[in-house]
Image 1: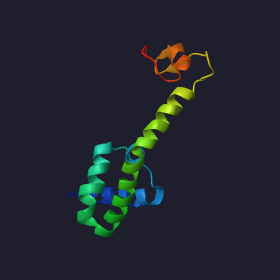
Image 2: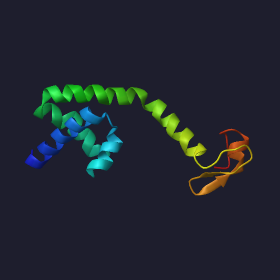
Image 3: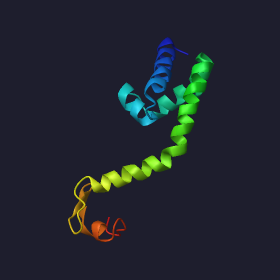
Length: 110
């Protein structure tokens, strides 16, 4: 394993312990892919520093356990951030859907 990969892996491990951020957030902040972060933390880190890897594993398991809640929250925020008063059109991506508001989240026009 190259030295720069070992260094990055240790930095990622220490960073997730400090911040408890998600893999997606860490990938964005370090300028690497989610796959790279995940591989570094789950496969490479145990070979480099087993104690740090155990702490990281607990955080990753916690994130996995609550991901269904995060997903629901993200969807709720996505549809509520651009208005959302009854009858007021809500922008969804590049589309606007009045039906979304009228049916309180159930829309076949999206």
